[in-house]
Length: 333
Image (cartoon, rainbow, N blue to C red; front, side, top):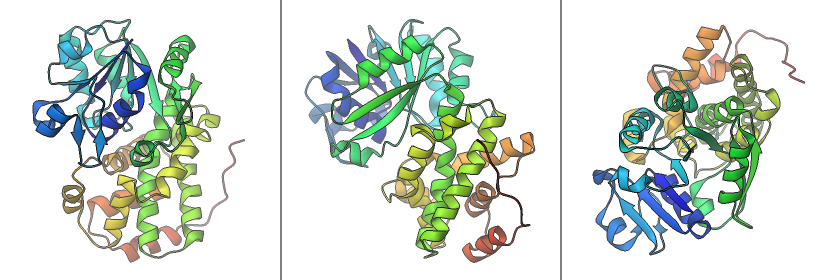
């Protein structure tokens, strides 16, 4: 079997490294400007994380050649680039029976479409699955164990990907047919991770962090249910599991963004310093627009949107959240 990874960023290279022994052939595609000489010649990179790939892994900027005869194609480009990649996949001759697995977590702006909706709008006949869960790249590269969800409306497709991409002792996959829930859990938790990094750096304590995660999850569930998700999915790997991992680890880019915002840094400077995409930044805008459209309150997400896009001070933001009108706690089960 052949695996093709679309996107030579941190998570794309990590997945290629993790899954190499599962496939006879592995190809990584990236834009010419994203492929360093070290990566092409030595199958090695040190930015943003150090990854050493095996010799059998091919690196190319030729998309048509990259997807030729691929059984599974992993899309691991930024949310903002997924539509263009799908258009290029279409031109490159992707076949409907090739399984496209999306591993990018986010919502497209300004359309407010989930990644599966974006992909299907360009490739309506494509076999498609979603990969999401608590998967911090650095821990995966250290060989530490984790689990994730593979979601597809066709359970047979999900089971095929599950079997092909599970790695004994390292990467355990569970199938799921709730594509909406798996996608939204993985996307919206990034906003709450920014809030978590923000609170930790401000020294607000573990009680505050626990409260933020809980109220943040309530927002994720509220929005996701309205968009058709099964609430139980949000308390699984791609929801609660990913939320806990991302909100508690400085390895998370979104957590790091929150931490730097709490220090008074501006978002443009933060993203420049990070040198990689933090999907929660744009997703904070997307969830606020979705919530407004649905008539749902999302105060934690709105606070993060303000922290990212306005000049509000950290202290003013905290006071705004803590002094909202008192209300009853929701119940979902």
